[in-house]
Image 1 (tube, helix red, strand yellow):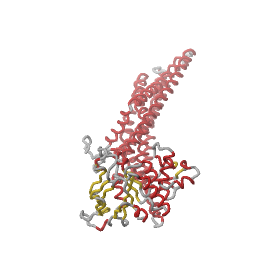
Image 2: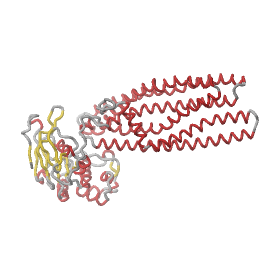
Image 3: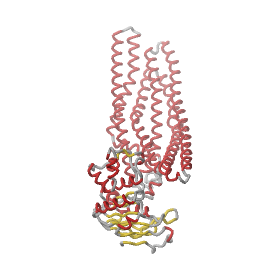
Image 4: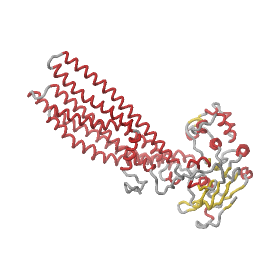
Amino acid sequence: MNATTGQRPYEPTTRNGLRLLAGCLRDRPALAVLAVLGGLVYQLALIALPWCIERAVDQGIVQDDHSALLRWALIIVGAGILAALAEMVLGWYSTLLATTQGNRLYIALADRVSHLDARAVARYGEGDLGMRGTRDVDLVRNWLSGVASFLTGVTGFVVMIVAITRLDPLLALICLLCVPPLVWINTYWFPKRFGAANTALSAAHGSRADAVEELLSASAAVRGLGGEPALVRRHHERSATVTEHTLTTGRVSAGWAALSPFVPALAIGAGLGLGGVAVLRGTMSVGGIVAFTSWMSMLVLWVGVITLRISQLSQATTAARRLQDVLLPHPTDRAPGTAPLPATGDLTAEGVGHSAGGHRILAPVDLTVRPGELVAVTGPTGSGKTTLLRILAGLQPPGTGTVRFGGRPLAEADTADVHARLGYVPQRPVTISGTLADNLRLGSAHTDDELRAACRTAALDDYLDAAPDGLDTLVGERGSTLSGGQLQRLALARAVLRRPPVLLLDDITSAIDTTTERTLLERLRAWSGETAIVCTTHRGSFLDAADRTLTLAPAEAAAPDDTEERVTTGG
């Protein structure tokens, strides 16, 4: 439970969202202060312009004084230049604040997601996480870019009321009569409805993103089974929901944008009537009524800007709550480990098993893998081979038992150390948009020669040599320009580059021919040295080359509570 809000951490409140927004401002106070200072100068220069125009009209035009008219004209030009420069300062530092803090949120979210296990990621869905890392962060960034103009706009509104009071208290009263309905419109009536509509829209976007992810990743697999229309239909249904909520949000936003300026527009009409009578009676100058009209026109613009900023705050608060839903700890998450792992050591599994939905996925296993060993893991379909590898890699916690490296439980170890010691290559690897070199390096500083050596170890050198652009060959969306076997070998080369003490390979030769498989196996053994390799496989060459073979029992073969029927090797 959160001591301040009394809510569970994974159910962030509006207060949690506002705390994140306030933290973005506190993190870079200098940028926020400079943006506000620029905005204040900008607002004061704008407010001064009608006052200068009043003087130019009364002292220059009405009195036919050319020197006074020229003097005030030059002052007006100077005020305009000052306003332009101040607006540049406001825009520059607001953009810096929004960009730096937006990037900080991107990094924090990526770091948090990288430490989540599979069960934690499944709480959200990959598509929804993508929306939180793009749309939600962008909404916070949009608010940050406008927060200084909101604060200075409110200040300018107050100063303008004082200036109108100087002209005529009755005109100021008309302006003040606008305030209650504007406050009600802009802080209660529309924000409440806009916030609810935007929350529903954000959830709909996340749901559709999940449908898109499923459509892109699973359509090829289910096409032959006739399942693709169901995925397309699901996408269309969720897209229709997004459209419905988008229209609802648009209706609320349109009503908000239309009604807010309408109130001060009424005040302008009333003020012109009263001000015109005052001019005819001689109690107000012509310049004064011109200044009043100018200030009220500014008021209409400011109300529009302030309304936009308040709507951005509503959107940003919703987005910040969704970000906090990921960034704040979840009660079911494992506490992050801090213990360092040794540089080398045995990888051991003690009674490791896993169940889901009341069904056992992996029967309890005991396993020890020593440096330099090649251990093959085989078993019937559904026996939990991939699950075992993911547990050994620290990517998901075991349902039962303990995994250790060098005698240290992975649950207690620093996550960065776990990832550095245990390299995992999935059967269906992920690629990024870019070149072969980009996909191999993933931000590391490996040289081209090191990349080529890794490709040779992974038996990808034939493709590399045949590609006209070599390492600069573009990899299509989701690796579409590569075959399944080439994708698997690319992922293996990526892991080889990092040379972890333990390499966990999930059936990485399932999509390659036997000749290439033998070449890959020979080169991998020659490269491995003290690197331990665990590979799930059904292929005879890997089983023959392995130092030991672990055969998993079918998951349904043993009773859920039976801990005696374990497949044991090397223990």
